[in-house]
Length: 116
Length: 113
Image (tube, rainbow over all chains, first blue to last red; front, side, top):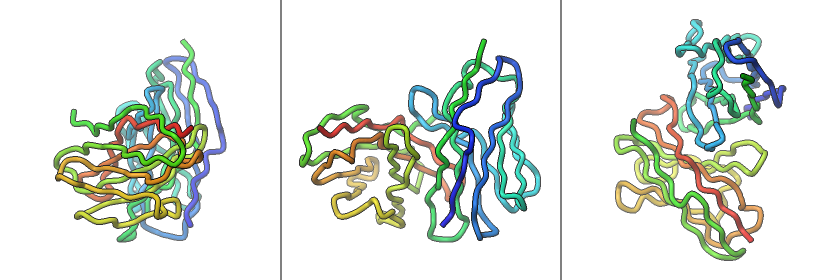
């Protein structure tokens, strides 16, 4: 079974600074998808960024980018120019590309605090 | 922007009672999911639903749970006889095509007393 590990339960960053959230995963599969979701105090889970394992190029979405290291099974999220609205729980998630398996496997999450 | 809508936002129920959690997925989405998050713990997969049938379910999704898409717009999760340990946030999600990325609803907080 696949597992996702977020080893840092909490982090803080100064507004306008850059922060990197770490995530590792364990799988024997070669084809899969990785996601970062954000959960603000409103509790809604919001997709931040998505990465296909077969793509070598790291995904970027505005101020959010990933460092995907397939051999190391590492998938970190970098938030540049941090804003107060970035404060939230961040969840890393894995999804198999195998047909018939659609579930996301989540890490435990990491609470990000943004200090003004 | 299209949203996944969940109702109610909070439900309190007595142990042993049946509850139905409701979701309206985004209209052109084809894949539907339920997840739950016990306070302070991981988000856990319950069930996926496609083409009017369950396509995958977890060990959590036992006989007390059922899902239905009764009218082509709503997607419901029924818990037949609630237990204290069913207290959690329940999230509905939908997806337009597989592996594109879910859109989650805001969740229903279920409290079983």
